[in-house]
Image (tube, rainbow, N blue to C red; front, side):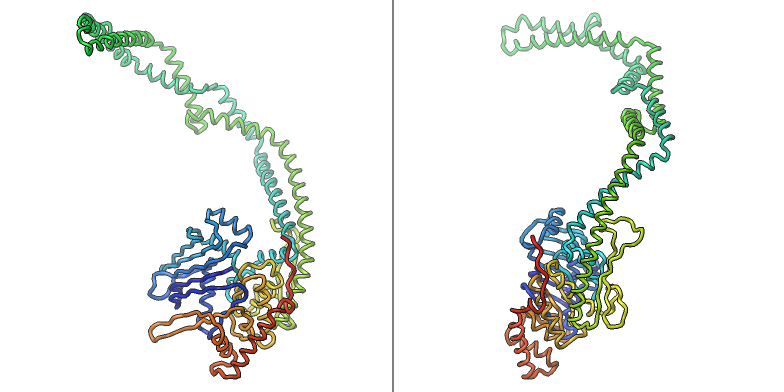
Length: 574
């Protein structure tokens, strides 16, 4: 439920902080006092579109935040928070900032998130039913979900989604194989030729690097041989002096005196080791010089082999080092295509079986939706007539278009239709002209589906165009709904306002230079005075105050029997 709302620099609101409690809270005030701005703030926090002109003149940004208690919210919100690594706490802080240049940022529990993520989270927490376009009842998806929820069809609808996903996966696989099979023979011939070429090359692992190294050695034969011979002469073969002889002479000079000084005694062993190393290096150089004997036939064989490798690499549009991977790739594709004919026949049979399973489940779901739609239509129609739409008709149209493609939600199209006046043909809910009628219809639907309602519901002027006894019924319906969810209601009718567990008054103040909005919680005499104003207009009389006291007393007494006045559907099992 919504615990706290903070608004900073929104339109003409400089700063407002509101604490909300459970049950039904009514918001009242003069026309134009700014009640709709509170709804606008909540719409922005639910991901509504924001323009730069929402920022209060002279301010740099609008800063909005709401705290929701989420301890009792189910798995959908938890999964969403886990998916985006948002810290889970007993409360969820939703914050949005709109700057004067129109840019917008959103946070959930202090973590910056895309606007769509914030919208997905708040849709699970709050639903606004009012005279703006921000409302869920007109969406086909919402209408279908309401029927499934009313009829306890969520499990069957889930089975249909699973069956559809299985069928679609198999279908896509079969289409891929069929597309490949359309030029299968030509592709097979090409693959066989390419694989045979690569196989005939018999390229061994590491062979390319070895051949390249050998070609480099042969092409620089003269330089390598000359350098090696010079090094060999300097180390061992030069006469009369070479490195080996000089090291040996140094050792001979030190050996007779090494016993005279311990420090000097350490050097002769080092010279002996150096002489050994020089001799080993000389032997290695001698072998290397012998190996550099030029073999024209070997040079020619290397060049031919490398040319064949490079030509095949160019033909396959890959680097020479990637020929092995290319051979493995083409071999796998050839094997797959060779077996695709048998695979395709088996796969087509699986597709047909999966489609049959989906269609059977979808037909079951469609039949149960028809039953649920009849019961839902009957209950909602009775409620809208109680809510001042006498003679109004409501029904849910469930149709199965001929030849419709299978979809995850089944084979049905569901549309809510309503006639608000006797003798007028029913029209789609989305085409209802009156926002007040749509709000009352939303109220009727939510009371009917109270077990599936969102934790917090907001009704903006559901009392438009009604009064008297009907207005009292609207208030009782709202109060009944608030036993299942937190309900906030913007109203101009005292009959509705008197039903609220709490009442907040929105006021506009103008000091000649600035206009500001304030929100005050009304209790005791202050609440009586506000109800009396709503009853009596500009001039508040003693009789109006007495009537207000009486209305509050009647409302308090009726609260104990509100459930009987507006019965709710039994709760679903856990």
